[in-house]
Amino acid sequence: DIPQSLPQESVNILAQSSNVKIERIVSRGHVSPHNGWYEQSQDEFVLLVEGQAEITFESSVTRLKKGDYLTIPAGVKHKVSFTSTIPDAIWLTVFFDSNA
Image (cartoon, rainbow, N blue to C red; front, side, top):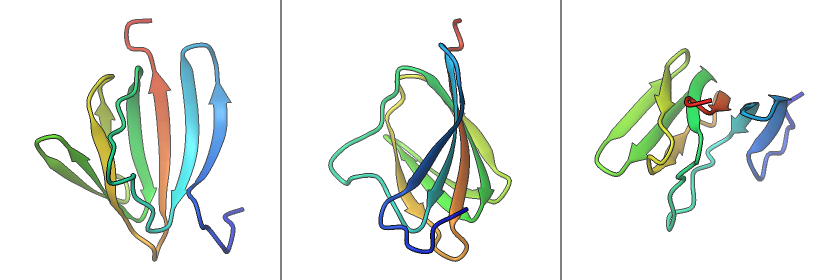
């Protein structure tokens, strides 16, 4: 059910509760805005299901390929600096409170 045209990332919430949210994100060359960082209040587990991607942190860059995963602790500044177009980068993300 991935659209042929994808002018913006496709984000689908698969499940959600008071302290956990699971999303499927489809990126086709989409990246974070150049002038800002993500800095969530929850921890974020990221699994790259398909494609390739790159996440930039303040002092490092992590390159991901299909099957790679990482956990981004709450409050850590990061941005998506690259996503593949063929194939699409398909992410499974889980936002959770590690202190809950």
